[in-house]
Image 1 (cartoon, rainbow, N blue to C red):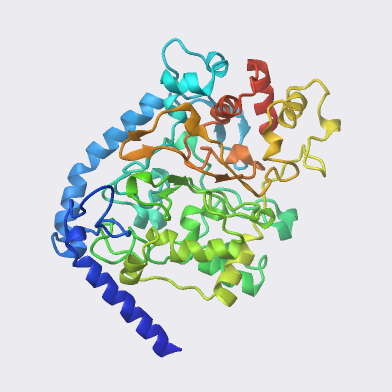
Image 2 (cartoon, rainbow, N blue to C red):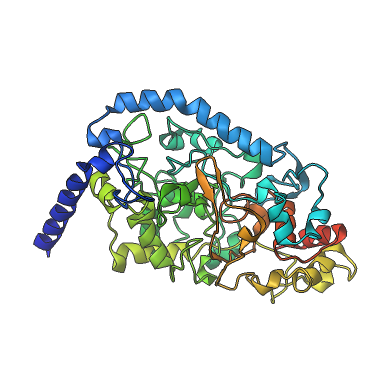
Length: 475
């Protein structure tokens, strides 16, 4: 068995160096003819790897260009959204962070959401009236991509290793989940939040979970907070960190089993401009989910765990993974242990929901905004068609065909075209997971309701939208 593994590794390594020496990859413009003909499906290799640039030269160039990249993305965001901090201090996440409120999406001059909703998709597209904030959101540096973590996260001493010298995260902190998030376990609901207000890391996980998790799950948790090489965070000279790094842990993106809204690009699409930004989803409640990955129909949490390590960490590039240090997990032990721990991560408590996942009528007046919102959710607003109770997901994929409303266009290096099917995310605990949609383009629940009112053509009134949001906050 060992000899077969060594032979396979040698074959992959030889393939890597053969591709690395290809003129089409050694310098831009190597492809000929239409589209990407003549180029490797793995994309453009770093000049550092091909020997055309030293690490110092690359870092100097990237550092010098950083301000321009950030300014371009900031201009895009300010053109799309009102980024002013506007929060509801009476509606908070578990540990007290007030939720952001909107809508934040800027509209064309003279236009309102109600006027837009009365127009046909074709008219909106042909007249160029689709709100820019509803278009796919590009990565802060889409031509380069890679994992990117919020600024408040990398300020922590134990997280400074996640700081890139070429790029900063783009969305303001008030539009992101609270940090660190609370942790709830299906096995110990009686304990409530077990996080102790700490970030789960290799240094803290024993202190937090000793006596709560069994030895097998403690090993699974250790693996979830262990750093492994990743495309931008590793020890090779084409990394994007000043110092060599051991890599990224699962719980760096899925902080405390939830999310920090760290962003990345999907690994299974080429060319680069067609890849899609991914807002890290929460792992809360994965035990009731049957699809994983926002645009891939991975069928189990085991598949997801294995896929992340083998593909997502390296943008689907097996050659880069071989060079940087791929972490091949054993499916029967390590993947199983990690998956078992993820299946213990529960939704935050929703004390106003009954056993059926709907509002307890004893806690709300029949004419309350929340009860009216629930009726809309399961009726006129059409939310429950994809988000049925009690977990508010149908574990399926749906194509919203948002491209009906806009013409294909390039946005900061990304092609805004048809998006294809997207999995139905659960809405339990939704107020704790901004921003929304798979790429984080919807900054608040108000933005989200306006988006779906337009896309689904449900013609909700201003009051109905308010009531629907009041219900969503109870989930």
